[in-house]
Image 1 (cartoon, rainbow, N blue to C red):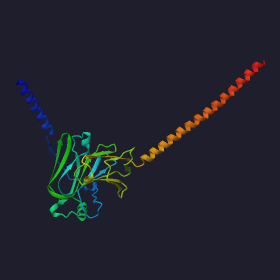
Image 2: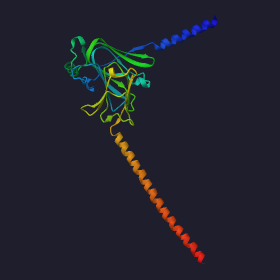
Image 3: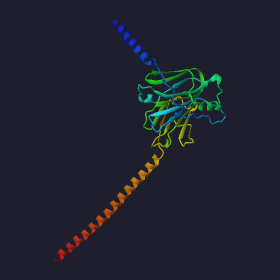
Image 4: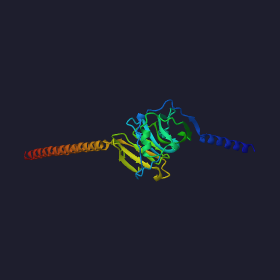
Length: 287
């Protein structure tokens, strides 16, 4: 009986540990002051059909200083956003995970979700006075930031997150229909030697600034594709690499030519020495 009691106690203790590990650890994130609107690009993205249909869109603007990434969300009739900081895949830190928070939104019941509305919102000089809460949850080691509005809103929500750097950007796929990554000017992806995007994006285009822009459509992605990873590099890297390989091959060729030439010269000298030895041998025989 004592053994059974001990086993039951151990099972209960294990269950408590498992439950406590799975429980959501919540803490509120306090934004001291509104972010700087001028730091962000508020682009009105529409689907390829061109029928003026707008959908939730998340655009990541990667920076040359790749320790940070700017995120701009187009939200349509949305009351909650789940934000997955990229650094959760690298362990993260205890610092405030979200910075320079900006909201340019209006209540959905007072707004028509069309391009004109988003254009008007993007031209505002002050952030919206819509009540919201930001909370951070840690579920089984994964950090999730919940942005909740008091009522459904339509417009732009922008913020800055930390990034692991090293010209690599990895993030968890979320509920936005369109997911875009805009690479820094002068950087690209797509070369299997230097870096590619996984899974493969639905389209790759260039914007007016010449920046490579990758697009994923959530509804066309597989259920197993939970994360998106982009490895990028300086646009001239493959050319410089090719030039370095060519220079190396030329150097190897010159070394081989020098080796062949030296070998021929040595063979010529050896031939002369052999002739001299043969001549001396014949001279000794005559004597």
